[in-house]
Length: 517
Image (cartoon, rainbow, N blue to C red; front, side):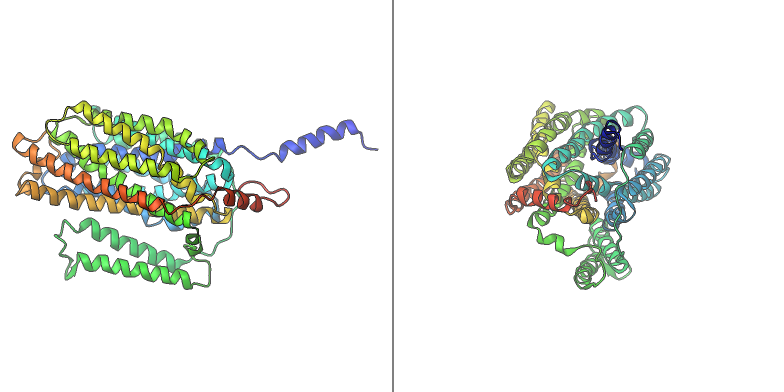
């Protein structure tokens, strides 16, 4: 006869064993790596003038140093579609750890670089590491948080970007001024080690899903993205003419567009498992969120270059002083993003996205209006604060809306697509702003190439600073207008909270099922 007193503790133990594990410690561990990637991007933007002065002092164009950012974004964008799927196949934890290790080692290589091509090469491989890491953060959130808690989780994801906006520029300014530009990369080493240990201990091993990898799709997508981005980035350098023998820049871009069209056709026709499940785009919110995050990526990347070149070269501020002007944006974005995430769990995402996009776009127009030699420096804190408030309504709400209806099996693919569109927006923004800045410099400062050697070597002389300021102010209008177009895009979203909650319950209705299965 069974002793009931012994059966009770055993039953209690069984219940405890089957209690779902809290997903929050794993998310906090993953945020460390995501934080490092964002800090690395913002640190580099502040250090661009110093890098140009140290490694590229004699050339007459700004686009060479822009490749420090663009090579990273190119290495990041091209593999994202496959790395999201690799996370589903081999486990998001394993891909995250490999990507974090590669990113950290390449940071060491970046800091030890003695030439600009060497630095650009390490940045490209560093981007590959980031491409392995980033999709796994969103995939883990999608697979472990139910839809009615996902907004809060994505709020933390968004708050991370706000804190990185503060830590990156400030740390970059202090390191560049105090120790040299190399230390903006060396600082990643301790962060990477700590993040690796935390992820190893805290992130669970989620069930894997068998996938057939569409290698034809991988090759087509990678080639298409490379030719398009490379052509856009190098267009201004080659005056949009011949780039490789008789091949022109426009032919290169057109070839990439054709390959992209072939890729989409191949994905629709393939009988095996497609690299990009086109069925995901039948979800209107997923499609619009991808367009929205591409617009945000374009804007955030493209606004930084004219902003930092104006503040440092025209107004004579140091990198540290330039970074201090971003404090209101970073603090407000970091503080408000978690609250926006919690509110998102109870309301229509458009009620956050429309004001967020409008505030951010308005702040950029305001910043452009202030970008002249007569504006008191403290005035630039005001549009910075407005940007911070707007940012709280962008990152988390867009990511949450994109992933609300994803099934666990599609988490990696959906995250890979989302991060690919965000990064492609960033690459296009980097390429577009480089060409636009050069064009505005030539328009406002005829013969700008004669003065370009002074870019990155301290404050410009007064006869150059005025036209240079006007060129940077006009350049700021490009990201401002693009962000305003995002308002029109998000209006096509719909409130899908009830449908996504029902889908989650259905996916986890099986006995013994746990989040992520």
